[in-house]
Length: 110
Image (cartoon, rainbow, N blue to C red; front, side):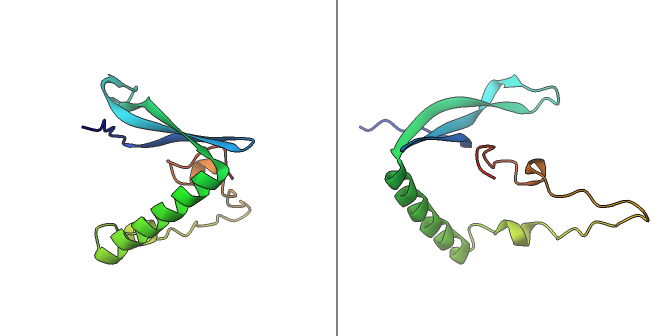
């Protein structure tokens, strides 16, 4: 039998030279934050060559496209209605920041 690992997502992606490290995380059954939400905890690290990582991303994009076409996944653009900021006189709207991007985006990439 092969070992299997469940992960709720990717915690961080780190690129160092020709090596890409992908940290897998899952929600802790015991640790919670101040809002009583389960904390993401490190589970396992995947280590790729840059070429291997690029190939893996390509394969995952194809798998995602199949899930979208089958209706199993709804793209983020269709899940949330677009919000248009309302400008007040004399106040400039804040520019998009790293925090305004998706919550699961790695801080290593802009």
